[in-house]
Length: 320
Ligand code: AKB
Image (cartoon, rainbow, N blue to C red):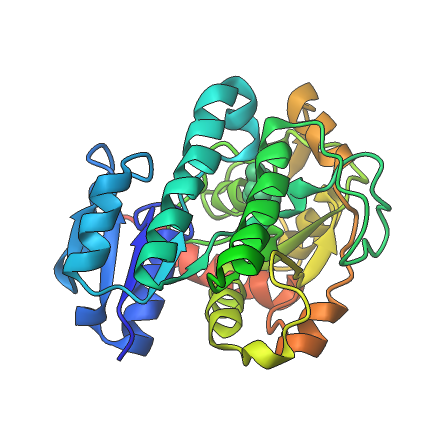
């Protein structure tokens, strides 16, 4: 049985990915790595092993990997796009110095590594419609610069040292479990919270701005299926375009209004978020992922909206 370390297990993706990996590989085989300021709680803490795993501390990572005989590392430590613009040095320290530590530990201990990239790895000069798998990547944000570097460094470790590195370029991930913090696509999560609470939503992204999105269950499956894919079929590694849907604020608003007709949205565009969103693709071409490892999303805008509203209604229901 495989032993897995999740770095960043208490974050937006990590909290759900750790649970999904434990379901697939057994609770005892998945270590929830965390930083002291964000320790695991509840099920995440109780269901399996956990350890302080600060991506900037190479020795600590090496000790955990040896102690738990880790075969695969899911490295989810990163600042999201908006907050990274406010703290570029920290974004680099976590995203790239941290990645270097992870890759070195993986090289020394024979681990596979998944470090997600993002639609943020593209920039204004990238073709925006059906953005190809292999195309121009000249982002203007530190988030994008660090994601392109992540892809290149991960490929470098594969070609030079044979480290089994694989990744997807995640679109905006939408979930009712752990809210995201500091991303450009966060509005597509926040809008559901507002709708279920009966509040009006003020959208920070302009009408007509399309971005790729994905419901979290599909995102978790993408990561796990890629890591289980037959390596002989992989022509690409870091990183695959994956998408499930592409929409603008007015489209998600209308999808919600079909279920909550009284829901209202207005706009107050945030210049930083808008500049980032406008530089990202409108829609990705994910045919390489479909061909090389059978990627197939299960949720579209309507099915995701039904599930999000159902789950959030139960989550936000007052106690008693
Ligand atoms: C962000 O908005 O920063 C992230 C992403 C698409 O990478 N959700």
